[in-house]
Image 1 (cartoon, rainbow, N blue to C red):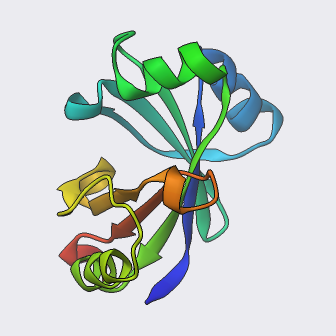
Image 2 (cartoon, rainbow, N blue to C red):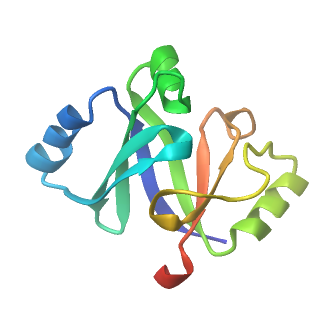
Length: 137
């Protein structure tokens, strides 16, 4: 079951410039800054009420976000929904014919379980599902 929109992710070539916008001009607080090795990105996560804005900057051009920026430029990358049971949700979506990028959850920012749904099955929008780490429930 979906609980809420967890975050909206933005791909950026320049996290410092984005930080100026989100933190200094819009007044959002950074709640997390993290390097995600398997995705080859650094992220700044900003608090926006109960939701978050995640700004992702690639550390290597051949990373998924680096390729996204090369093909599409900066902008909205994905929307993430918090779910109560990610494995059950993935099974249900797969049974309904939704193409999954991740058949099994992986570990994302903050130790959360994450999985992505392919935009070909979701009206052109990359969707991430996340289940909080057990100490966040």
